[in-house]
Image (cartoon, rainbow, N blue to C red; front, side):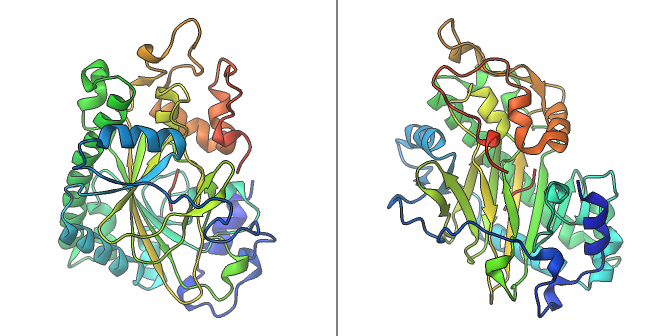
Length: 356
């Protein structure tokens, strides 16, 4: 674990002004895979939510990729633009100003480095801002006289994302032959969904730097808005790392660990990472959607029988977040109770909550 060293080294480092990659951020090897995999001509699925066959398309994408993009999703484009502008305004602040809203050592909300940093010997070329609940407290520290505009955009964005998350959950469950009514908590607001803003400044040596290291999300699903700069990559068996290209107006949907558990492994959580660019700054905004914190998540009864026993024990989102913080890439294994019959291995078992 490198938590203390990471936090000390990173605390006052302004990545936006660095002309040379510091040793603290120089990774020894970033697998020699191209941005677009040469092994597979397939591209990450793009699904229109107005397509009459959307439910089947979403189900197939969850099963075969764990990630897909959606268009015609109902979220106003001007809201996505306002959210991106708010993120740029935040990360453009002087480092000392941003540190006024720094995340507490044992906290979740606020400004800081990727929370998965402690699992890696090198630091990541990114800075983040996490919002749990109201953004008011942190926004007041960042903009004492003009915090309301930022807060208003955040609240509007979260409201629209929650609507979309409900629609996506309905499609995902429906594709498994399950209704929202079968899952009593599915129609609720979720457990104070988190918003994660990530900034990846232009990097002087992108071939030796990592924006955000490979990980899966500890969510049911994640909705990601990425700006027009490539960087997000998803891992697919047989194809390696495949870039999820930015599509104007589209949103990226990731299957998270809790949906992996809920689907009894039918919809695997996707391993993904973020690369950096030599000349362009990249910004992403992730809406992390999960169940109410006190609800136990376990394989859906409709998906289990004597031939297909539950592979995972019940776990709440709060408990799982603690497990992920402790075990990281072994978290799914630690809550598994039965070896899968089809030889399927958890995505976390062989690769090393935050999203790119």
